Length: 183
Image 1 (spheres, rainbow, N blue to C red):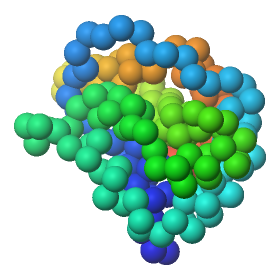
Image 2: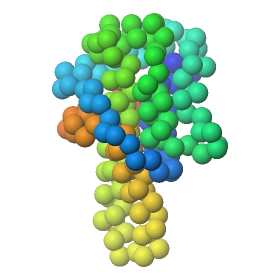
Image 3: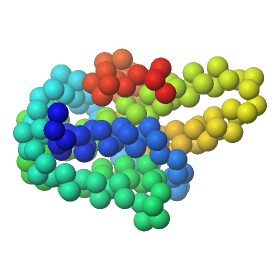
């Protein structure tokens, strides 16, 4: 399949969510943006959203990666996520989101849901590894680092938004081909 705006938005958000390692600076609580209806629309219309973004081709591929560039070459996922979240999407991207039930702020909702899917998947993997390696002192440093990263990621979203996504993770994770058992 040809790389498209879909890949840049959804895949980049999730990939960064899975592999970022820099801590987040203290900040004010992020704005709550999701409702249960938004999560339902994301699930119900995910394929249509992807098709709509695919139809735009590579037109906006250069627009989104800038949000992921770290000034020092390191990726601070939470900061990158906040940059992406704050972007004013091109009208065509916003129209795809709105047409598929995510409303006027559909781009932000799409990004927040995608990011939260990554957080919940990482938390599941962390919980699994913490239990599996509880008696392994060599893994403690690694697990502590992952925990700090997950905590930093969580600090970039409103807890209520994360809770909405976590409650529907079984339906959401397969949309982005995510399985906590893979990590």
